[in-house]
Length: 178
Length: 162
Image (cartoon, rainbow over all chains, first blue to last red; front, side):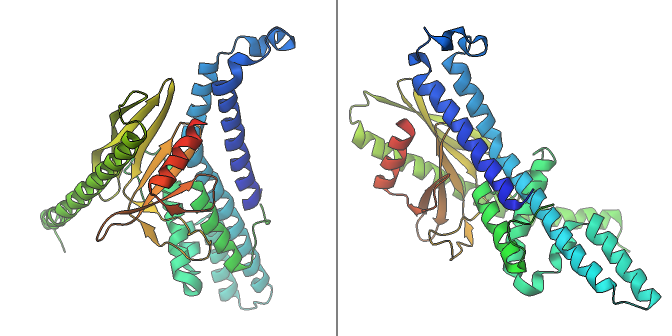
């Protein structure tokens, strides 16, 4: 999945929920229930209030989960990219000690703290790294069940733009996935 | 080596220093939301002077922001028949959105309040606080942020009711 795929999933899901909610709120009771619609066992028992309540419930949580998914995809893409660059460098190393050190670094990139991976890019654009870190902190808050005080709130649009900009700066692009 | 007693004492001092600042930030934000609510009520009164159509109620929201703690802020519930729109305080600390051009960053915002019917949403960001609050509004799937004035509010409100 690429960052753009994740964004597309979010926008599509939101639109579908909004459409179904709108259908329930504005038009459900005026639909031609005398015909085939009225014979559809799945639909005929649905009431407009339940449709709206369901859509609102899903939308209420969608934005937070979208930030979580957007950031997870972003994290995978960045880790993969950094890993591929480091592995490329490794082919030119000869000394056993240096190879061992770099192997340790590879482990860190694959499984270590993503915060430390991002730190490396502070030299290129410290402001942007901090903006991405803000998204990371919000993702962590959502991922851990939103039990603690809320860090700076991040909406999906802001998250996507920041993450996309970071990938652009790295020259990765939003089409690269994992 | 620092003893536990020393550590607790230093933490207590830190808390004493942080608490007034957090309280100031909380009170300042809650007041800003109240002023926004008041402004919205005033625009609604202009649209429905005799309060015959719209019913406006205050709703409490429990918030818990990092660096501020738990607190209550007030929102609004606006009813038009069976339709309901909420003015919902989201957080004092927010990641600022990008500007309308998508090039210039708005580094930060000083709070966010949503205007929503549950299905669609407009986000209202407090983009300045000194000398006065300045708010901007952006539809969730829109790209143009604009000043939150009466015209923008009425457009958003009507959009949610359409």
